[in-house]
Image 1 (cartoon, rainbow, N blue to C red):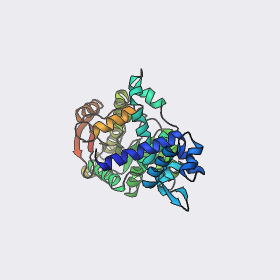
Image 2 (image 1 turned 90 degrees about the horizontal axis):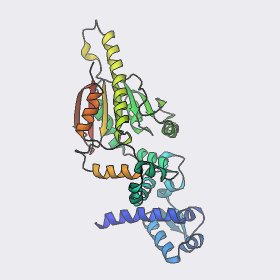
Image 3 (image 1 turned 90 degrees about the vertical axis):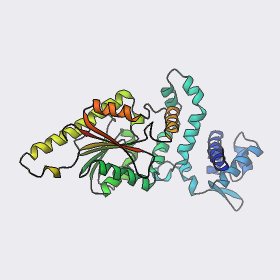
Image 4 (image 1 turned 120 degrees about the vertical axis):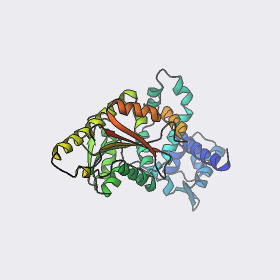
Length: 332
């Protein structure tokens, strides 16, 4: 492990320790010095000094007139109200916590249930905050890949896309966009998307999908177990096939049928056999209680073809260590 990697690990470990011992709450409240932290917690003076030193060195706190005060980098540790202020750090701490508990998790009768029960109260907000912090370049790359997969599509249903960065980008490019996600996640995204022309459609990830030209999702399949994946693939196919059949009926007398948009399901995924960091992502999913898994290309092909998709193509996404799976229904 090089120095940078060790520093990164030490930062997350220090934040988790500060959170679990109460030192973080003390610093965010009215503890001004390491001695104050020691007085407010079970830490001794040396331990408090080390923790505060690490957190200050990493930019979460700064010394102002003899007192340690939180910086903007600590904003996500202070409040969870606005997803945009959370950033990736709280999610990193949650992941570290899940890794530390992994031996006990895997020893449980149901590891997924055990991992879910061990989640902190802010687990979901932290996950959404980290996703909100996805770089614009990554969002643009995924949306561009989807547009290449379904050229001419005008309507988009983004499944599982809260808090809505991809939906926002689709809307900015002129698409009519619907965001489908679980009610809790849609509620979390609602304040961010209120100014946007995006329809919110709370529901399960396997509920029937509105008729559309393009069904889009990013890293959705790790949230779906095998039965849920099959159900999602079937509902996506039905939504696209309904639209394609309606377009064919409307265009029976139209000579220029080539102008009809391509209907497609486009998944931007980290496939098990193609993405270099998939083993780590699979461990993340296992440790944090995600019910699905990262699939191989072959497994996804079988699931999509079984659902009725006639063509399934896989391409690398320029600028991402991910793949685009483009599936078109039988009537396209």
